[in-house]
Image 1 (cartoon, helix red, strand yellow):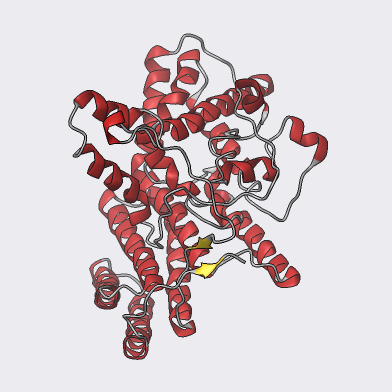
Image 2 (cartoon, helix red, strand yellow):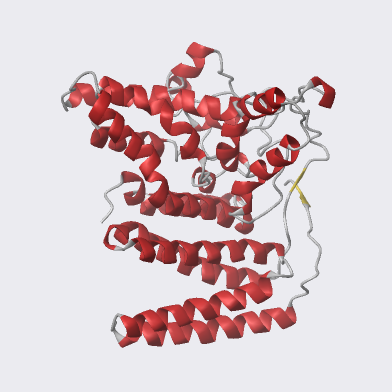
Length: 415
């Protein structure tokens, strides 16, 4: 069983999301949209699943540096735990800040900022590639001699802390805001208003922003999202979009020196002969519209049905993945990511998704049945797989006939 505190905290995350949904019902204030929330959580699923394979980068390299380059052998006690907590948060500040100030790194972090809503589900929206650009910021702790097990545990606590600050249901918190990161401070960080961009990078302690000149207090309500809206519910595409966009411009930039600058300078930097630096534009709030798609209720219910199954499979996989072989892990990850990718495409009612979803249902059901025979599993696996196939395929065929696949996307004005 995975003892990662982040994985163990999943039930608490969904409990808090449930509380926010209750607040939405009572206050009649629109906090969640189904398509946006599903995409947010799907990005979290994708990040956790790919993290099973990429953890060798974050944890493995830290362990190797600790083993061969550690200067001191720091004992494990309450004092070093406190010091390590501050040190991890300090390293997080710089990793986070550089993820905003280096274009290549921004491609890994931009996923977290794409949502135009601000609620607890946004905390789960994480980029799958971010670890590739941020792990090195923690290596000085390994050189100093902080034990890898303690480092992983404390890093998880720093991450868990940041869940509760992704909400608009908590206002300003007075004295605590002088030194701790709070919902008010972090709302600023998610704003795409020019005055809010690249501010408040702290994880736990806002003191780092105040010390290094990146603090901004919350004034008017932020407009959430990124300056180039993603306009997609596909959790795979949202991880790739920025890099595809960068590749397009890299091919247009003739000089290698400028190509490197484009990759490692601040997002928005271009050579002078391509227009120079492009700062974040002002927002016309009177005409601002969130990206949204109107989908029929039967289709939403179908997506929700498939999504709940994917959530259950993800939780099972994350808790049990240590018991799986490499090929079993790959099969699990591909099946789950294919499911949530199709859920996003169904929200957008892409023409190609109707055929792909039927193929997915068939492949998944046949795969589980074949595996049940091969491993001599309980016959209930076969019965459940057949039932899943019949229900899902029948539902999809009915939807395919009843839903207008060519319905255009509809954007709704912000409420």
